[in-house]
Length: 101
Image (cartoon, rainbow, N blue to C red; front, top):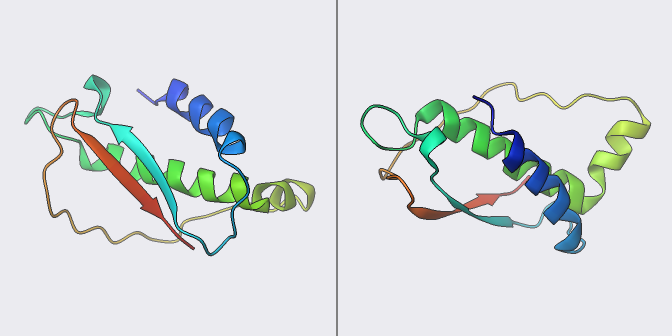
């Protein structure tokens, strides 16, 4: 299931965090929720990529880039992603997502 409530939260809270340069690091505090886990009771690797999208949304909104994208009718595409999983994230574990262009 797609995390619709988290998506809404990202869009609502990004504006309140203040302005941000496109090249600055965005830090989001998150928690592993029951809908994020797999049969091993840890964060699903597919869901991790979805959570990474929230970092992109935060950077784009706070830097004003999303407004330009909408005005010019552009699209944002991720051509590829290379992920190296270093630690397991368990249910209800808190973590920080760092995003930077």
